[in-house]
Amino acid sequence: MAFDTSAYNEPQEFFGTGYSSDSSGLTLDFANALTEVTSAEADDSSGGDARKVIYGIAELLFNKYNAIPTADIPTKMTISRSTSEDNSTGEFVRNYSIQLRLDPSGFEVANEPSA
View 1 (cartoon, rainbow, N blue to C red):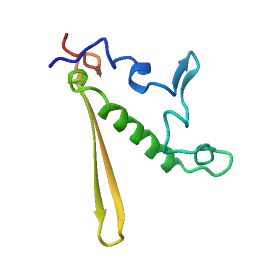
View 2: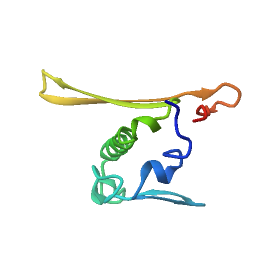
View 3: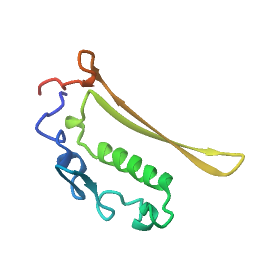
View 4: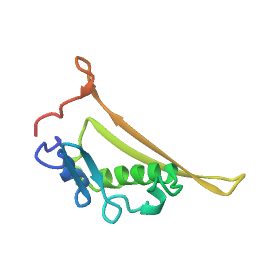
């Protein structure tokens, strides 16, 4: 199945509620986009935790990609996640992999094939 260039290719379609942008930047809100992060954890003035923000962004990307219907999954991008347990500490270890195919002439994200 070919990637449907009319679905899930624009940021608002991929991120959904909680994403906005303007000429000065983009915003992902806590309630709808970064659900793994609280405002206190992201607050740089009160000792927030950058690792928690990174985890929230990684979870957001994985969950949004994983929610794309099979027929609409891009062929030039994959996002995967694996979880294992460190038996020596009892902690869980989560790995994320993001793969993007790039056009060699401009080192930009390669175009998807037409539907």
